Structure formats: structure tokens, C-alpha cells
Image (cartoon, rainbow, N blue to C red; front, top):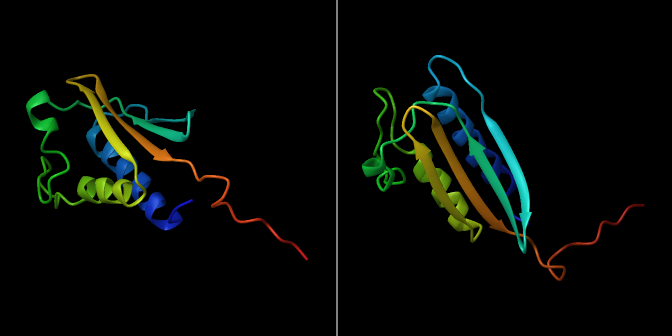
Length: 118
């Protein structure tokens, strides 16, 4: 359960960032996995990676490493995840790529709406 448009916007931001970080090409992989009572979404790229000392700043408003960036894309990603009571972790290796690992809670059975057709 969640806001479909906000989740779509979050994923589009992550994929857009991945594309922009792979200036010479590469592969973007998206994994979906059930982990107990959560869904885990992992977005991986083969870009230039992020230095460890910069990882803590990634989700700060207006922080960007891009010359034409606003620094609001990843802040929006984090905001959407928090709206859905989720978490995000970043794993990155310089010159190898970056993975954003998102965990969102699955809806409990009591929250699911029955589908009624006529």
C-alpha cells in the first residue's frame, strides 16, 4: 500500500541518477525481493561510484556533485521512502558503481482492500 505516483517518482529519480553517472555507458539493474514483512528494491549502476566521505551528504537538500543539478532528487527519494515508513541504504565502490537498497513495509492483510468486480 502506498502512493503509486510518489513511488514511481522515487524510482525514476534513482534510475535517472544512475544513467547520468554512467557517462560512458553501463548497466542498471533493479532487483525486487521479499524480506520477511518488507519488499526490498535495489537499484544498481556501473557508474563512477561515490567516495565514502560523501555518502553521508547524499540526501541533504541542495547537495549535489553535478554541475547542473539542484540537489533535490535524492532528498525527494528519501522523503518518499520515509512517507512510506521505509529505509534506504547506499553501497558504493569508486570506479565500480553504486547500489541504493530500499526497504518498504508490505501492507498487512487488514489494510488490503478487497477487489470487487461487477
